[in-house]
Length: 350
Image (cartoon, rainbow, N blue to C red; front, side, top):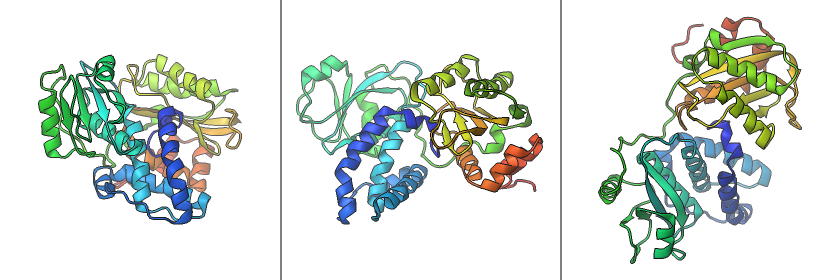
C-alpha cells in the first residue's frame, strides 16, 4: 500500500522475498544474530523504502512472536527497491547489461535496483551467480557489459566491478565501461527519499465523484477512469488495463475493508500523474474474501515508481482512520472530502 499496489502482483518480488525469508526465518525464530553490512547504506540511500520495510518487519514480528532486527529490515528493503524499479517506464535506446553477484539474491537485486535508479537507459538482461557465468551465456544474452560484485577473469565484453550501493567512483567506472555502447546521456542520480507530489496536487473537485450508482466492480473502475480521462490525465485504454489486472490477479486492489486502490503499470496511456476518487451509493463486491463490499475507490495513475509516494502515504494514513473514512464515504460534498484528505498537509488551511 505504501509503495505501489501493483507490487502485490509482482511475481518476481514474491519469489525473491520468499526465497530470502526461507533462509532467514529460522534465525529469527531462534533469536540468532543477523548481520547486514549494508544496513547503514540502505537506510541512507533508501530512507522511505526502509521505513516501509520496517512496517513489514513489525508484521513479521507479530506473526512469528520473535524480534526482527534492523539488519533484517534492511534485507527486506532490498526486494521492494528492485520491484519499484520494474515499474519504471522504458524509453529510448538501452544497453543490455548482465549483473553478477556472489553474495545471494538480496544483494544482487539491490545492485539491480541501484543500477536502474542511477542509469535509467540500462536494461538488465539477467542476474547471474559468478559460478554459473560463462562466455557462452554472456553472448546468448546479448549483454554489452557485465556489472559485477566479484572479480571476473574471462569475459567477451567489458566487466565493471562495483559495490552494491554504487558510490561515486563506481558511477564513474560504469559510465566509462558503457561509453562505447548505445546508452544515451545519463541523468544525475536521485535519492530515494519520500518526495514527490502531496495529495492536494493530485486530487481536485473535478476528479471526485460522490455517491455513484453502479452494480459491479467494472462500473467502479470505469467511473473512476472516466474522471481521469475527462481531466486529460489518461487515455481510455488505461481504464481497460486496470480491469485486466483485476481479471488476471483477482481483487487484490481491495486493500482494506471497503476500500479499493485502482491502478495499472505506468505506461504510454498516462499523460500526467493525477488521481480520482469515487464513493458509492451502494457498496459493490469485488470478490475479496475479507474486505468486500467496496464503498470507496481511488484510482491512481503514476508516471514512474516513486513520484506518488508522498501522496500515497497521506492517503493510506487517512484511510486507516475509521472516522475519516466514514466522513468521506457518507458526505455529498467534494470540498469536505478534500479537506479530510489534506488537512494534515503542512500549510493546509483548516
